[in-house]
Amino acid sequence: MKNLLFILCFALSINSLGQAISAASWTSKGVKIDYAWYVSNAPVKEVLVAFYDDTDPAWRFETWAQELTWLADNRGALLIAPLEDVDRLDSAKLEAWIRFVSDSLTLEQTKFITLGNGVRHINGLLKEGCAGLIIAPSDTIATRLNEQEVVVGLIDSRKDDSTDAVTASLKQSGVWLFSKMVIGDHPYYFDQHKEVVLDVFARVDSMLLVLVDSTSKAALRSKVLEAGPEVLRQGKAFELNLFIAEAGMFSFQVLDLSAKAVYTKKMFLGKGGHRIKLPTKDLNWGVYKIEVDGPGILVKQKLMIRG
Image 1 (tube, rainbow, N blue to C red):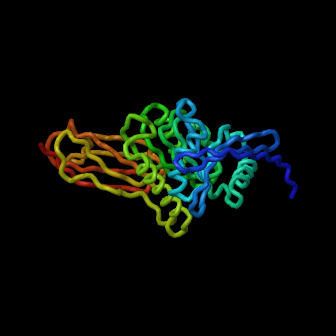
Image 2 (image 1 turned 90 degrees about the vertical axis):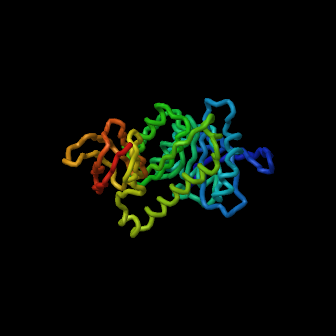
Image 3 (image 1 turned 180 degrees about the vertical axis):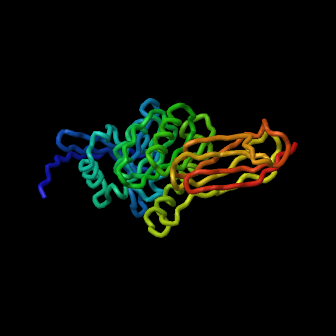
């Protein structure tokens, strides 16, 4: 096979706390990608592409790669943090770049992690079916998926319109989305940030295992993971945790003893996990029924509200 790639590679070692970060450059037909990289001492199982937030002066592609060495070590990953926008690469060039930096790994073994406005660079990887983790998105994305099942984790540590827009775009595109909200003064260095990142990535990994197992995938169905309480103090929201296997419109109703709806909420839910809250502050003491109705699920639960 003719190889028309012109490859330029140089190494620059940056030593910090014993972790060696290198820098390199890859060129193909006039398209150049500069990137920092780090390889775990553990057996390498995946490529992890890391996109940084270039609006924060604390981050550059080298410092973002340096920060994430702990994650690469934990996951057994070859970490690469590109400087340029890899969305400029078509599918073939993206595959060639991954093979160049990793020798034997491919796009099928590639995941991403992104912080802040780095989220705008993941469109190409999403289109190729790559899973990953989004942290505190501060920009929007334009998802255009192929036929692959895509799994994404999202850590909501900087609530704003961008987070809502990214979440809506992923849900509407049919992505399996697993979100976690955290409270903190920094979009990345929130309390126990490493544990949270590992936890959400573990949920992504678990879903990927289900999707590659034909038996497990066939058994996927929407269900209640955690039911709300049967007795609730007036004014406190009723919460339930759902797993949705088929995206669509869902109806949440509170019915009185005469089966009359005293509260109704309709919303689109994408595939993945959802925590739903229903207010009760306008409801009198008494016995009610909670009803959840949507694609592939119909749940009814008794609820008593008291003072």
